[in-house]
Every structure is written in C-alpha cells, then in structure tokens.
Image 1 (cartoon, one colour):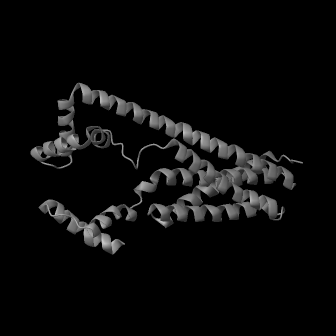
Image 2 (image 1 turned 120 degrees about the vertical axis):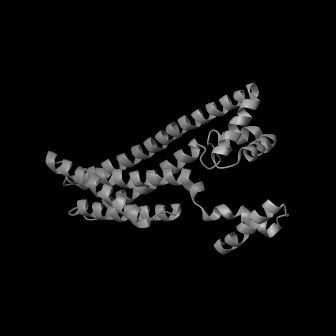
Length: 260
C-alpha cells in the first residue's frame, strides 16, 4: 500500500498541474492515501484511551486503597464494582456534555459565518484569499483559488479554512460518549477480575502488578493505533499510574481503618 501510494501521488500531482486526466488506478491510490495517516482516528482514539486508562487506574487505585484498609474481600469487590459503574456513567456523561459544548460552539460559528456570507460576500471572499496568501500563495493565485472554491461551495470553504472545522476534527458527542464509557467499562473490568479471583493476602501487589501490565498494554496499543512513540507512551502511563496507585495505598494505610 505504501509503495503504491508513494508511486502514484507524485504522478497525480504532475497530472493535475499539466491538466492531464487522472487514471482510475491513480484515483484509487489517491482515495486510499489517508489509510497511512492517523489523524482521522483522533476523536474516538482520544476518548477511548482516556476512558480505558481511567477505568484501569481509578478502579485499581480504589481497590488498592480499600484493600490496604481491609482484611476482607467483600468490601474490596463492592468498592471496585461501585467505582466501575459510577465511573463509566460519569465518563460517558462528562464526555457527552463537554464534546456537546464544543459542537454548540462550532454550530454557532457556522451560523455566524452564514450570516457574514449573506451580508458581506465580497469581504468574505477577500478574507479567504488572504488566508491562502498567508499560507504561501501569490496574491493573484490566492484570489483565483478563493473564487473557485467559493463557486464550488462557499460555506464549506470558509468553515474549513477560516474556522478550521473539518470532518476529521468536528465534534461528535455521541461517538465520544460511547467510546469513553465503553472503554472505561472494559478497563475497569480488568482490576475487578483481579479482586474476584486472586489471593486476598497479596491483593494490593496483584492489583498494582496487573494494573501496570494493563496500562502498559493500553499505552502501547494506543501509541501503535495513533502512530506515535510506544516507548514514550509506556513510560508516561507507567509513571503516572504508579504515582496514583501508590498514593491511594498510602492513604489506606495511613488511615488504618479496618473495614469489616
């Protein structure tokens, strides 16, 4: 796939410049170009990673804190389960509300842009041309591009280039809420399984060890899906995971409350 795209893209560019027709094979290669990039995954990937990370970390930390203050399994399981359910609902609701706020801002800006295009189309045309000129086009070329894009779809051109809103970055509240809530549930289920089946005597250490393993696996998977550095992601998630779980365990020991 990579070789095909790198072969066709320069040829496609040359054909566009010279006005030559693009072949069907070249067009298919161009359509698949985004397959080797990762930015189109940013919305759901951010919500899913955040949800899974919080699910593992918050439920494991809660379980460790209760385990440090209890000699019985039932309070640990109950606290972990309660944290899992409350956390998943909170994450989904919080993600929906926050992303909906972003969506409301985008919608308001688009409506404002529609009004500006109706009231002052010439001013908006020159504003669009200035944007392209600022990106490196000559003044005449920038104006020509602005005119052609305006004729094609004036609102889409201004929304994309003036407001910076495009299909990949546009807020999607339902998608974000579902990804975050489902990921939290999946992540939080892993520490819950540890509290259910592993020996109570060393449950704090088991929770820490397995949670760290889950976090490292998540960090590596997220980095791979996003095309970023796996090592950097693993170090970051390991450090902050250890800090969070360590502090919760300390709180459990310091208070010294025996939960029966």
